[in-house]
Image 1 (tube, helix red, strand yellow):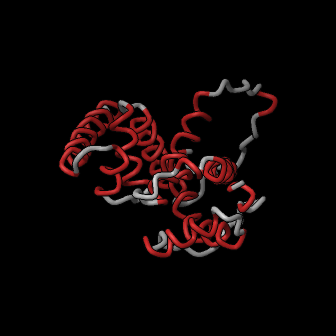
Image 2 (cartoon, rainbow, N blue to C red):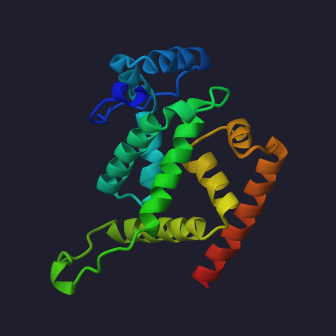
Length: 201
């Protein structure tokens, strides 16, 4: 079974690594299909940081949640590897799984946290913390605006800017032209700008 080649735990790699080259990728995937654990570890090492970074942005900087969702992403990827279209880039396919994993988490019913469970913050803001807070609020507003976009625009924006995927790869994943993806990005940028201006008013 293909999934048996997957590592039981996804390690955290300190360095940022590029997505594998197509030839290396095909070789690793071929080895993975035979249950080669080392090939699975190499694919994780070459893609982990980008997937984790994208999920970190999607979750609004929640490191623990991003790490958990990254684990889930690789688990689902190994389980569905037999359905992977080898004509597509592995990193793009993996990002789509990460994106869907995040959406499933967002749609899941959440437990209400009582006031007694909330952390008590007593420290006064120090020098520079006001600016950090302002930037954090801007990022939070932007994230909410992105999550509020229509589905095709939301995926395109997050894949391009948070997943750092090339326009050509997003177009292939979405089965549209590169021009269509650029049009989506332009439209999404316009919507986001208007939304942020409304929030700031």
